[in-house]
Every structure is written in C-alpha cells, then in structure tokens.
Image (cartoon, rainbow, N blue to C red):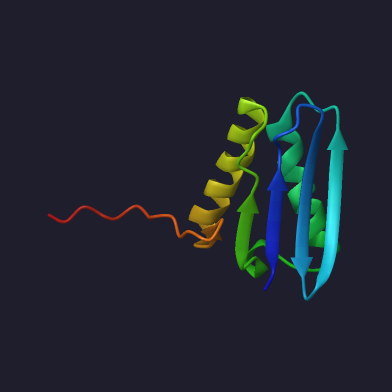
Length: 103
C-alpha cells in the first residue's frame, strides 16, 4: 500500500513521507513560516522521487496533534483536499464527496 504521511504540527519544521512498495521517501523543511507554500512542493518532490504520481497514493495519514494550531490546520487541509481530489482515505476514513442536487 502506498501511503502519504503529512506532519505540519511543529512550528519549526514540516515532514512529508511517502511509503511505496516498502520503500520510504522522506523530505523535511526547517524553519518555515509559510507551511502551506512549502508542504505542497515537498509532497510533489517525494512523489516524483519515488517515480509515482498522486494517483498512486492509496492512503493519506496526517498528524492531528498535539501541535501548533495553524500547522495542524495546514496539514489537515492539504490531506482533506488530496482526499477529495483523489477519492482516498485520510487516517482510515473516507471523506464524503459533494453530491449533485436532485431536481
């Protein structure tokens, strides 16, 4: 199972890890005030380094605390957006999709 891990709880660093075929790819950014602008490129880099694509992600895990409120919010928002776009589970739960209104 290919799993993406997102950890933005620390005020001073971001950790992104991707496990593909039992191999671990990991990137960190230190002292980043703009977590949202740093986390997404880190995810993109580790996915490319593993010779995979976002569609190859089977599951997303995100750190939910304790930690910096803003940092946690960034990581959870990224995980939720990827889950919605890819139809994948976050922390073992499937998020609902937007249904078209019935007329």
